[in-house]
Image 1 (cartoon, rainbow, N blue to C red):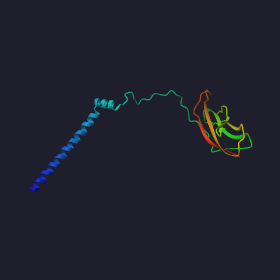
Image 2: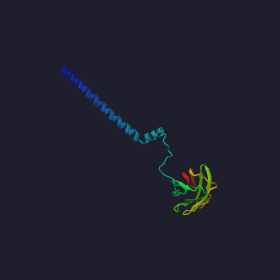
Image 3: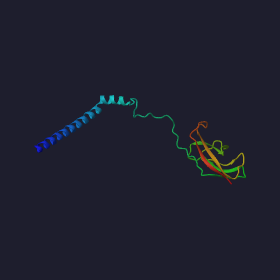
Image 4: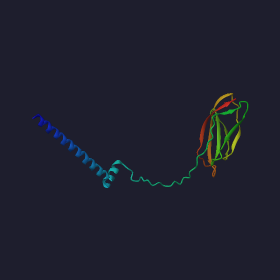
Length: 167
C-alpha cells in the first residue's frame, strides 16, 4: 500500500507541473500576440503616453554652423613690476574665422581691452593703468569673438583664469 501512495503522489505532482508549464507557455503566447497585434499596440502606446508627433525625420537646420574657435591658453603671465608697458602675446590663431576682442583683468579690476584682432594677428605689448607690487596676482583673460562678416554679431567666447606674476 505504501508503494501505491507514493506512485499516486508523484503522478499528481507530475501532472500539476505539466499543467503549470502549459499555462505559462499559453500565457506567454497570448501576451506576445496581444502586444504584436497592431490595434492593441496603438492602445498600449496611448496608455504609455507616446507622442504621436515624434518622428525619425529630421528637419534641416537653417542656422549657419560655425567651426570651432581656437582660444590660446596661458599657464601664467609674467610682468615687470617697475613698468606700465608689458610684453604679452595675445593672438588670434590664423585658423579662426572670427575677430577677437581680448580683455585682461588683474585682481578683479579691468586693466586692458583690445579692439578687433584679425585671425593671424596679435597684440604683443600693452599699457597697464597702474603698477603692481612684486608677487602673485589673480588674472582673468576674456576672449570675446565677433563675426568676420558683421563685427557687431557676437559669437562664442571664453574666460580663462591665469596667474599673473609681477617680478
